[in-house]
Image (cartoon, one colour):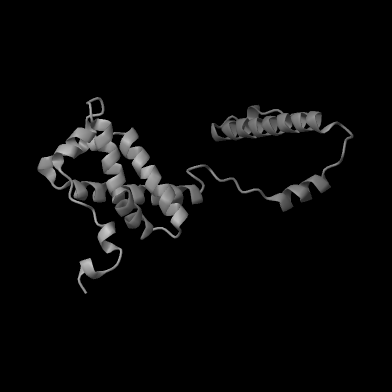
Length: 180
């Protein structure tokens, strides 16, 4: 079966476009550029949607990605990079769409892995055990937290200073600290 005999395939093909229209569409401030750009978007919307749809699970995702592709095409003036000497316009579009889909997959994958944010594991069980073992003072939580936080910082600083003195051979100069 030839490609022109497969129902719907012909409409998904990337059409041959006159270079005059492509070059006019990329000149944003030129009279007729807006009409040429609109015509290109209408002409290529379905083929690009069909191409994207083959690589995403749902029609809604394909529609969203297709709209996003066209938004970027216009907003970032991708047509400014079109060069007649480098090949066909449809090849340019196909490469641009493929790169766009790859970038979207990378972006979605990064978000699933935390989006580049440091992930902090919360050990609730250890925190609960620690809370149960600490005496309650009847002090309001905001003051208690503030005091506990300051005490933790001071304890860590003191431990670090002690370690530095021991490492430098000045352990004999350490005096015992009172704990409050």
